[in-house]
Image 1: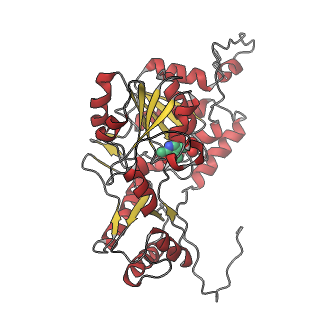
Image 2: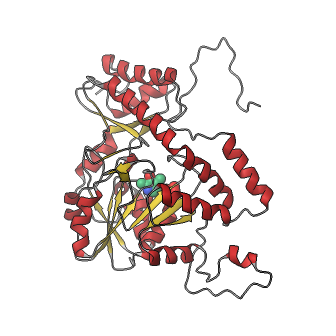
Image 3: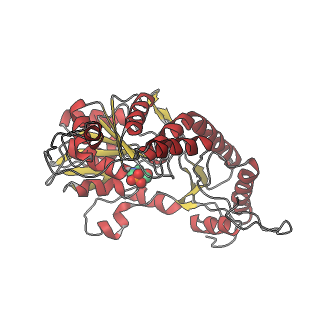
Amino acid sequence: MTLAPQRPVTDPAPSRINVMQPWFGPEEVAAVTEVLQSGWVAQGPKVAAFETAFATRMAAEHAVAVSSCTTALHLALLVAGVGPGDDVVVPSFSFIATANAATYVGARPVFADVDPVTGNVTAATVEAALTPSTRAVVVVDQGGVPVDLDAVRALCDPRGVTVVEDAACGAGSTYRGRPVGAGAEVTAWSFHPRKIVTTGEGGMVTTSRRDWADRARLLREHAMDVSAADRHRSVLAPAERYVEVGFNFRMTDLQAAVGLVQLGRLDAVVARRREIADRYRDAFTGVDGLRCVQDPEWGTGNAQSFWVEVGPPHPLDRDGLLVRLAEAGVSARRGIMSAHRQPAYAGLDHAPLPVTERLTDTTLILPLFHQLSDADLHRVIDVVRSGAATGSGASR
Ligand SMILES: *Cc1c(COP(=O)(O)O)cnc(C)c1O
């Protein structure tokens, strides 16, 4: 069955190339069907199995599945004891949920600038943003590029500042030979379809601390002292108690069943994505005014977002190149946002963030996903290279 109308064979218009597409197969369909047939669809055995498998794959001691990375970050800051009166250093160069998590717990986000090569905070940019009230720092593996976590921890650990890793984009990336996130006390992950492993919506908290994992488990389920799944197993369920004010941040077994299959695809997905990223880099070598995201010396990225910085002497600026791509049916995207420029944070003071603003204004994200065909990859490369050769649209 085809949902989209078929193009006539004579239609010369090239099909549209998306910036990102999740990769599902019949295995995900079978996994969801099995859960539906079991009759237990809310948080239950599949969530528990997904947590175990995820912890093993990410070299984490404890994993707690939740409804999104946004709720994972919220819980991470709560279990770390962050609250009103505290400052939390975050990059502005990130999806806005990174900063919002600090706001949710009543703390104040303090924006740190990023390194122009990685797009990530460094020990130096974090240090410049520390205040006497800093209680935590959220570092991000932006676009899947591993952050230099050890350097930030060397700064923060002696000061009693907790480092939370926002690895929303980081599944399958490595830092000093281990999965990203493994070296942080607490890490938050996303399973949104823009990320590498997807469950539709979903997230995970991983942590090296059993007490933090236990509290995250409690808080995600209304702070009930007996989980709904456990109560269901007993005929005469004991009366549950609500030991503090919790949340409903649960993942469903339907989502976890998909996550288990997706986790099994992770290595293949990352290998293919890195191959496509290398093809882009090779194709753009020698194109003046284009700079591609690279692996840092301390790890390997998963190519979650392949960004290119466009600058002089390139004849087009970033927006001009985006228009050029759109005209050719290629759906690229503006680079990562700057949270401090959004109305939501307009009232918040911050130090100058020149690198953040530059990267937000000059980078674009090219199509990159597992099923991207060689023909479509060449189409994208040709448009970018021809834009560099002639210039058109909004030229500089
Ligand atoms: C996508 C993303 C999030 C939010 O993830 P959700 O699962 O959609 O809540 C948080 N932080 C970063 C860096 C992200 O890229």
